[in-house]
Amino acid sequence: QVQLVESGGGSVQAGDSLRLSCAVSGRAFSSYAMGWFRQAPGKEREFVAGIRWDGGNRNYADSVKGRFTIARGNTKNTAFLQMNSLKPEDTAVYYCVADTFGTGAAMASSWEFWGQGTQVTVSP
Image (cartoon, rainbow, N blue to C red):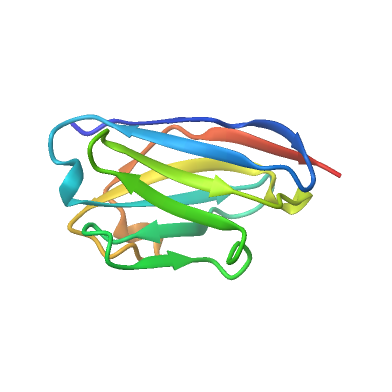
């Protein structure tokens, strides 16, 4: 069973930066597309960013384009989400996701594995 463990969440002020990490268990990391979703209180879960299993394509939600960057470190079985210029509307629980030979798609149903989430809170 693949396990995804997020870290790096916290409370910051608007304009600050955070970097989320996602540690992936097992030896098949290089075959996984990696991604991030988020869910704010009272709202539906939404796609944030995804990267294809081979790193060949990155996909972002319009709301984070130009501010967030997804990356993967194949030597450390870890994916990252660098979040710059944070806004209060970025406040949410952020979930790491993985999908075997995936494309980094925006649909939640495309992703096989989900982490437990990490809270990000951005104050005005």
